[in-house]
Length: 90
Image (cartoon, rainbow, N blue to C red):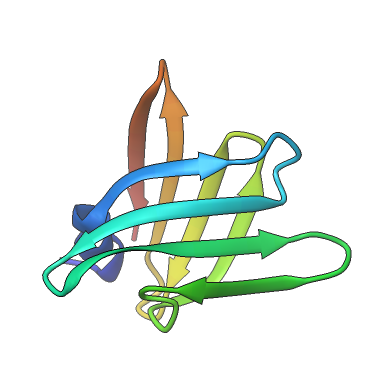
């Protein structure tokens, strides 16, 4: 199981702003609940919160978030018809 697949088990929902510059990924881990806050705009680019050490890089867009992990796997999170959609790539 890749890191992206393991991380996807923790993801419960996402919240994105309209501009595609901020995202919150809400998680439920064995240690408790929390969220990963991502921001990428002309002034700042950072990740903070729960599990930020596992995410090497991220891309934000209008309606989606792509997370890259240490083992090279990627996880794409989006909302499709009001439901959370998860897609993996090795």
